[in-house]
Image 1 (cartoon, rainbow, N blue to C red):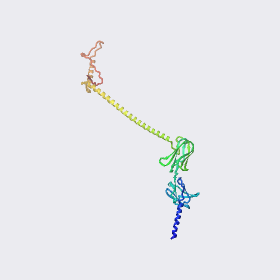
Image 2: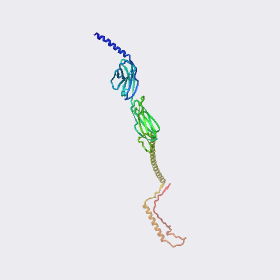
Image 3: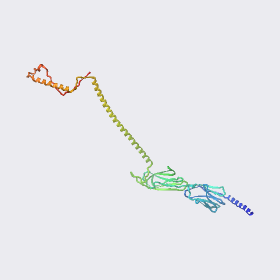
Image 4: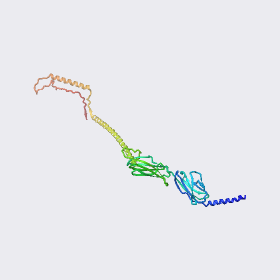
Length: 371
């Protein structure tokens, strides 16, 4: 019993010694910020003074690795460690394998029985795809054309540039965000080719010595009327704008000509209708005037009541005239005497004058006496 009570002070002395020795070590240099590509390795170092018993590594405040002076305590195979000596100090290195985008965050190194720690920040970048949609191109010599390069799925978006391996008379490019996808970038190269060669699109990571490139072959053909580029190269912007304006003006001109033609046709038809209508008016006015003049003449005179248009009466008068003429002829033949000279003429019986009628076709005569 007494021996057990005597052992307690000894244990307390050992614990106090460990506490005292533990309180004497410290972190001399902590980890540094790092930027790595997704899928690669990230390494962080923590330098501590002699006497340490346990080093803990945490990612976003979660302990992922513990290291003792003899061996590490691994709980996840993606997080391993390595140890180095630098004089009397110890260096603990944490290695993150196959870094993922979700690993982005705060890395902390801390010591057991110490309120001191050191931290750094891990940045993970993603290298996406880089492509030229049309691949190898066939273009026309001295004809401006465009080539487009797309960077898809990059975090952050890269800087895009071009390497032109063909003789050109002019070249320029513009880089920016995709209109329909703000997480992607696009670069458009405009150039006037004069020979065969290659075009290379380069995408450089920001903050890293890493890049990706894509190369296409360019074949230049001589210009010919009516020829169509096999690769279907696009027209320059100014040509498209000029073509659009020309087609619009032509369409407007056709509409104006159609409207003018329709107006002329309508006007011609109205003129013909009006001319016919005026002619009819003139004719009816002339007929009306003649009719009124005739009526005026008739009203201003007195009609001969002795006039009779009856044909029997005319026939009777003609018969009487023929009989009278025949009787006169007979009398002249019966009383004819010998010639007695030019100064002696004899008259017929009773000294009556001769009456003769020369009849022509009977005519109807209507007499009117004007007042």
